[in-house]
Length: 371
Image 1 (cartoon, one colour):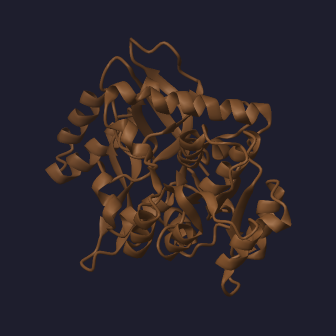
Image 2 (cartoon, one colour):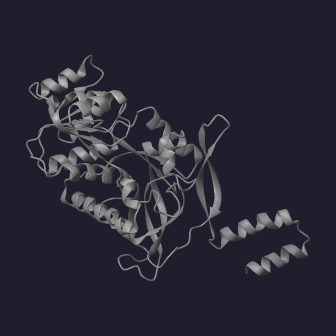
Image 3 (cartoon, rainbow, N blue to C red):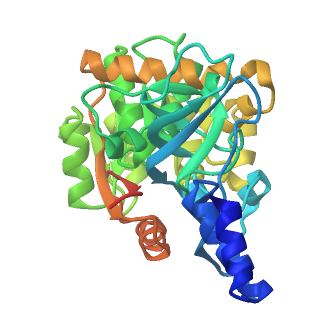
């Protein structure tokens, strides 16, 4: 069919440029191309997105799965990459996006767990053929999991990055006493929302967090936190109230989901030899000095670390399956969504703006590919 159409165009005396454009259309017609949002930067370094037709990914080996993406998440790390911050070193493709949900379209000959038609979700990060801001991605079977049957694609796409980060935070402190006092900064965000649920489901009750607007405070109470467990960081000297909430005793564990000046608050609230869980890598020099002076145990959380070696890749699929189990057991609720419609530059930029303005209010930004 393709050869016939090319022959017909040549007979009509079409130009080479027209033939090239026609070739692109023909490729799309037979499924060789896909739409994707490519990250671009202007002369000043400001990042934006351009929707382009690019080559559809192919299975790179017998253990891969081709997924048709139905929805993808927008995360702070995407915004940081757009701005050219240090996270840009993790960029393996001009197509951003680290979590998605979709349908299995094709499987390699060695794939055992999945078949075409399965509904799956994944943290694709730098272990896929491209990022998630696209119509397709090809990934190793080991990073995939079926998502909860009660979820739709949009809900499922809201889970991977935040859920894996929250679960890793929990696993790294899981051996500590359930009586430990824990302060969580940024509890109403995507990671915090799931982390607080996981901590409570695993028996941790002495947990305090902060919020910055009434919607966020209400959201945290819906997750099970009591009013006395929540401190409004808009109030003057709020750290004193966080300390008072723990009987004026320093905290055993501080989980920092914000970084920057908040890392200094976390460091000041931590007890000698306490545990500081660093999720952002945005701790200030002042915070690092205080943590050193307190001989703190510093736990670094980095989802992408497990993508550095092939033998570690099953971490992703196994943990996503565990998150699905938590949902099915009722210990993890469906995330609240800030929904953007369509694989459009405007939709993606609107999602980035919500994150840039700290206006998520407990919602995960998700773009539905086929609006």
